[in-house]
Length: 241
Ligand code: GLP
Image (cartoon, rainbow, N blue to C red):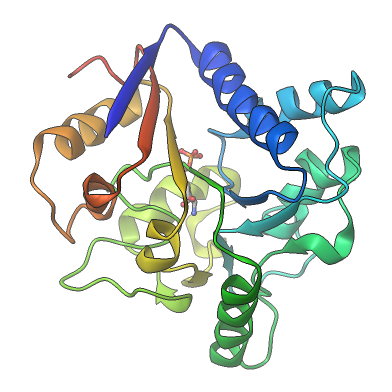
Protein backbone atom coordinates (compact mmCIF):
# COMPACT_ATOMS: atom_id res chain seq x y z
CA UNK A 1 0.00 0.00 0.00
CA UNK A 2 1.49 3.30 -1.10
CA UNK A 3 0.64 6.49 0.75
CA UNK A 4 0.97 9.79 -1.09
CA UNK A 5 0.58 12.77 1.21
CA UNK A 6 -0.30 15.99 -0.61
CA UNK A 7 -0.69 19.43 0.89
CA UNK A 8 -4.41 20.04 0.45
CA UNK A 9 -7.76 18.98 -0.99
CA UNK A 10 -7.05 20.55 -4.40
CA UNK A 11 -3.82 18.64 -4.83
CA UNK A 12 -5.50 15.40 -3.83
CA UNK A 13 -8.27 16.03 -6.39
CA UNK A 14 -5.79 16.97 -9.13
CA UNK A 15 -3.64 13.92 -8.62
CA UNK A 16 -6.62 11.54 -8.65
CA UNK A 17 -8.05 13.18 -11.78
CA UNK A 18 -4.67 12.90 -13.52
CA UNK A 19 -4.55 9.16 -12.84
CA UNK A 20 -7.99 8.74 -14.40
CA UNK A 21 -7.23 10.88 -17.45
CA UNK A 22 -3.95 9.03 -18.06
CA UNK A 23 -5.74 5.70 -17.73
CA UNK A 24 -8.40 6.69 -20.30
CA UNK A 25 -5.78 8.11 -22.65
CA UNK A 26 -3.91 4.81 -22.55
CA UNK A 27 -7.09 2.73 -22.93
CA UNK A 28 -10.21 4.46 -24.25
CA UNK A 29 -12.48 1.57 -23.18
CA UNK A 30 -11.43 1.84 -19.53
CA UNK A 31 -13.73 0.68 -16.75
CA UNK A 32 -13.81 3.00 -13.75
CA UNK A 33 -15.15 2.31 -10.28
CA UNK A 34 -16.58 5.51 -8.82
CA UNK A 35 -17.47 6.74 -5.36
CA UNK A 36 -19.78 9.36 -3.94
CA UNK A 37 -19.48 11.51 -0.80
CA UNK A 38 -17.87 14.92 -0.44
CA UNK A 39 -14.29 13.65 -0.92
CA UNK A 40 -14.30 12.91 -4.68
CA UNK A 41 -16.23 16.08 -5.62
CA UNK A 42 -13.06 18.06 -6.44
CA UNK A 43 -11.77 15.19 -8.57
CA UNK A 44 -15.02 15.19 -10.57
CA UNK A 45 -14.75 18.97 -11.10
CA UNK A 46 -11.24 18.49 -12.39
CA UNK A 47 -12.34 15.68 -14.74
CA UNK A 48 -15.02 17.98 -16.19
CA UNK A 49 -12.35 20.65 -16.77
CA UNK A 50 -10.13 18.13 -18.56
CA UNK A 51 -13.07 17.06 -20.69
CA UNK A 52 -14.00 20.64 -21.62
CA UNK A 53 -10.38 21.33 -22.52
CA UNK A 54 -10.51 18.37 -24.96
CA UNK A 55 -7.96 16.39 -22.98
CA UNK A 56 -10.08 13.31 -22.34
CA UNK A 57 -12.85 11.44 -24.13
CA UNK A 58 -15.36 9.43 -22.08
CA UNK A 59 -17.32 8.06 -25.05
CA UNK A 60 -15.99 4.52 -24.64
CA UNK A 61 -15.60 4.55 -20.85
CA UNK A 62 -17.74 2.36 -18.60
CA UNK A 63 -18.37 3.26 -14.95
CA UNK A 64 -19.59 1.28 -11.98
CA UNK A 65 -20.65 3.11 -8.85
CA UNK A 66 -19.92 1.53 -5.53
CA UNK A 67 -23.25 1.93 -3.84
CA UNK A 68 -26.72 3.41 -3.55
CA UNK A 69 -29.21 4.02 -0.76
CA UNK A 70 -32.30 1.84 -0.77
CA UNK A 71 -35.59 3.72 -0.92
CA UNK A 72 -34.64 7.15 -2.27
CA UNK A 73 -36.22 8.27 -5.54
CA UNK A 74 -33.79 8.80 -8.40
CA UNK A 75 -34.70 12.51 -8.33
CA UNK A 76 -33.94 12.77 -4.61
CA UNK A 77 -30.88 15.00 -4.31
CA UNK A 78 -29.33 12.61 -1.79
CA UNK A 79 -29.57 9.58 -4.05
CA UNK A 80 -26.21 8.64 -5.48
CA UNK A 81 -27.58 8.50 -9.01
CA UNK A 82 -28.63 12.14 -8.68
CA UNK A 83 -25.23 13.00 -7.22
CA UNK A 84 -23.35 11.36 -10.08
CA UNK A 85 -25.48 12.94 -12.82
CA UNK A 86 -25.27 16.35 -11.23
CA UNK A 87 -21.56 16.26 -10.43
CA UNK A 88 -20.15 14.36 -13.38
CA UNK A 89 -22.22 12.50 -15.95
CA UNK A 90 -24.33 15.46 -17.16
CA UNK A 91 -21.14 17.38 -17.94
CA UNK A 92 -19.13 14.83 -19.93
CA UNK A 93 -19.69 12.68 -23.05
CA UNK A 94 -20.18 9.37 -21.28
CA UNK A 95 -22.92 7.17 -22.81
CA UNK A 96 -25.90 6.41 -20.55
CA UNK A 97 -25.73 2.71 -21.40
CA UNK A 98 -22.16 2.60 -20.08
CA UNK A 99 -23.09 3.94 -16.64
CA UNK A 100 -23.91 1.44 -13.88
CA UNK A 101 -25.28 2.39 -10.47
CA UNK A 102 -27.21 -0.04 -8.26
CA UNK A 103 -30.93 0.74 -8.47
CA UNK A 104 -32.03 1.60 -4.94
CA UNK A 105 -35.66 1.77 -6.05
CA UNK A 106 -35.77 -1.82 -7.36
CA UNK A 107 -38.73 -3.77 -5.91
CA UNK A 108 -36.48 -6.79 -5.37
CA UNK A 109 -33.17 -5.48 -4.01
CA UNK A 110 -31.58 -8.94 -3.96
CA UNK A 111 -32.38 -9.48 -7.64
CA UNK A 112 -30.91 -6.04 -8.33
CA UNK A 113 -27.65 -7.13 -6.64
CA UNK A 114 -27.52 -10.23 -8.84
CA UNK A 115 -28.12 -8.11 -11.94
CA UNK A 116 -25.29 -5.77 -10.90
CA UNK A 117 -22.92 -8.66 -10.22
CA UNK A 118 -23.58 -10.03 -13.72
CA UNK A 119 -22.64 -6.70 -15.31
CA UNK A 120 -19.51 -6.45 -13.17
CA UNK A 121 -18.51 -9.92 -14.26
CA UNK A 122 -19.22 -9.27 -17.92
CA UNK A 123 -17.66 -5.82 -18.23
CA UNK A 124 -14.99 -5.94 -15.53
CA UNK A 125 -12.39 -6.00 -14.20
CA UNK A 126 -12.37 -2.38 -13.12
CA UNK A 127 -9.17 -0.60 -14.22
CA UNK A 128 -9.18 2.09 -11.52
CA UNK A 129 -11.39 1.95 -8.45
CA UNK A 130 -11.82 5.24 -6.59
CA UNK A 131 -12.71 4.97 -2.91
CA UNK A 132 -13.45 7.34 -0.08
CA UNK A 133 -13.40 6.13 3.50
CA UNK A 134 -16.04 6.34 6.21
CA UNK A 135 -15.01 7.55 9.67
CA UNK A 136 -15.56 3.97 10.85
CA UNK A 137 -13.36 2.54 8.08
CA UNK A 138 -16.11 1.52 5.68
CA UNK A 139 -15.44 1.44 1.95
CA UNK A 140 -18.47 1.70 -0.33
CA UNK A 141 -21.04 0.71 2.26
CA UNK A 142 -19.07 -2.30 3.51
CA UNK A 143 -19.49 -1.66 7.21
CA UNK A 144 -17.27 -3.02 10.03
CA UNK A 145 -18.50 -6.50 10.83
CA UNK A 146 -17.47 -10.00 11.91
CA UNK A 147 -17.48 -11.05 8.29
CA UNK A 148 -17.50 -9.10 5.06
CA UNK A 149 -19.48 -9.95 1.93
CA UNK A 150 -17.60 -10.42 -1.31
CA UNK A 151 -20.15 -9.51 -3.97
CA UNK A 152 -22.77 -6.78 -4.39
CA UNK A 153 -25.30 -7.08 -1.59
CA UNK A 154 -27.90 -5.36 0.56
CA UNK A 155 -26.51 -3.99 3.80
CA UNK A 156 -27.83 -2.32 6.95
CA UNK A 157 -26.13 0.99 7.63
CA UNK A 158 -24.55 1.45 11.06
CA UNK A 159 -25.58 4.29 13.33
CA UNK A 160 -22.07 5.80 12.89
CA UNK A 161 -22.54 5.97 9.14
CA UNK A 162 -26.11 7.27 9.34
CA UNK A 163 -24.95 9.95 11.76
CA UNK A 164 -21.97 10.95 9.57
CA UNK A 165 -24.14 11.10 6.44
CA UNK A 166 -27.01 12.93 8.17
CA UNK A 167 -25.21 16.20 7.40
CA UNK A 168 -26.61 15.94 3.89
CA UNK A 169 -30.20 15.29 5.03
CA UNK A 170 -32.76 17.43 6.96
CA UNK A 171 -32.33 15.14 9.95
CA UNK A 172 -31.06 11.67 10.78
CA UNK A 173 -34.51 10.08 10.54
CA UNK A 174 -34.40 10.81 6.80
CA UNK A 175 -31.16 8.85 6.26
CA UNK A 176 -32.03 5.44 4.77
CA UNK A 177 -31.44 2.38 6.94
CA UNK A 178 -30.22 0.19 4.10
CA UNK A 179 -28.14 0.37 0.96
CA UNK A 180 -26.85 -1.73 -1.91
CA UNK A 181 -23.08 -1.88 -2.10
CA UNK A 182 -20.44 -3.61 -4.18
CA UNK A 183 -18.69 -6.15 -1.99
CA UNK A 184 -15.09 -6.34 -0.82
CA UNK A 185 -14.29 -8.97 -3.46
CA UNK A 186 -15.62 -6.71 -6.23
CA UNK A 187 -13.41 -3.87 -4.99
CA UNK A 188 -10.35 -6.09 -4.60
CA UNK A 189 -10.65 -7.35 -8.18
CA UNK A 190 -9.84 -3.86 -9.52
CA UNK A 191 -6.44 -3.51 -11.21
CA UNK A 192 -5.65 -0.35 -9.26
CA UNK A 193 -7.33 1.14 -6.20
CA UNK A 194 -7.06 4.79 -5.18
CA UNK A 195 -8.39 5.72 -1.76
CA UNK A 196 -8.91 9.43 -1.19
CA UNK A 197 -8.90 10.99 2.27
CA UNK A 198 -9.20 14.62 3.16
CA UNK A 199 -9.66 16.62 6.34
CA UNK A 200 -8.98 16.24 10.05
CA UNK A 201 -12.09 14.09 10.61
CA UNK A 202 -10.40 11.28 8.61
CA UNK A 203 -7.07 11.46 10.47
CA UNK A 204 -7.97 8.91 13.23
CA UNK A 205 -9.27 6.27 10.80
CA UNK A 206 -6.32 6.74 8.43
CA UNK A 207 -3.94 6.23 11.37
CA UNK A 208 -5.92 3.20 12.56
CA UNK A 209 -6.04 1.67 9.10
CA UNK A 210 -2.34 2.21 8.40
CA UNK A 211 -1.18 0.92 11.77
CA UNK A 212 -3.59 -2.00 12.24
CA UNK A 213 -3.34 -5.50 10.87
CA UNK A 214 -6.01 -6.69 8.47
CA UNK A 215 -9.38 -6.72 10.21
CA UNK A 216 -12.96 -7.00 9.01
CA UNK A 217 -13.78 -4.46 11.70
CA UNK A 218 -11.77 -1.91 9.68
CA UNK A 219 -12.95 -2.82 6.16
CA UNK A 220 -10.42 -0.48 4.49
CA UNK A 221 -7.56 -2.44 6.11
CA UNK A 222 -8.34 -5.34 3.71
CA UNK A 223 -6.83 -3.18 0.97
CA UNK A 224 -3.43 -4.05 2.42
CA UNK A 225 -3.81 -7.42 0.68
CA UNK A 226 -4.11 -5.78 -2.76
CA UNK A 227 -1.00 -5.37 -4.92
CA UNK A 228 -1.74 -1.91 -6.30
CA UNK A 229 -3.34 0.45 -3.79
CA UNK A 230 -2.52 4.09 -3.35
CA UNK A 231 -3.89 6.25 -0.59
CA UNK A 232 -3.90 9.91 -1.53
CA UNK A 233 -4.29 11.82 1.71
CA UNK A 234 -4.09 15.54 2.29
CA UNK A 235 -1.93 16.76 5.15
CA UNK A 236 -4.93 17.00 7.51
CA UNK A 237 -6.05 13.42 6.88
CA UNK A 238 -2.42 12.26 7.21
CA UNK A 239 -1.70 14.38 10.30
CA UNK A 240 -1.64 11.43 12.74
CA UNK A 241 0.63 9.11 10.76
C1 GLP B 1 -20.54 7.31 2.18
C2 GLP B 1 -20.21 6.50 0.92
C3 GLP B 1 -18.75 6.12 0.90
C4 GLP B 1 -17.89 7.33 1.21
C5 GLP B 1 -18.19 7.82 2.59
C6 GLP B 1 -17.34 9.00 3.03
O1 GLP B 1 -20.92 6.55 3.25
N1 GLP B 1 -20.98 5.32 0.80
O2 GLP B 1 -18.44 5.57 -0.38
O3 GLP B 1 -16.54 7.00 1.08
O4 GLP B 1 -19.55 8.21 2.61
O5 GLP B 1 -17.93 10.19 2.62
P1 GLP B 1 -17.23 11.59 2.59
O6 GLP B 1 -16.33 11.58 1.42
O7 GLP B 1 -18.35 12.59 2.43
O8 GLP B 1 -16.51 11.74 3.88
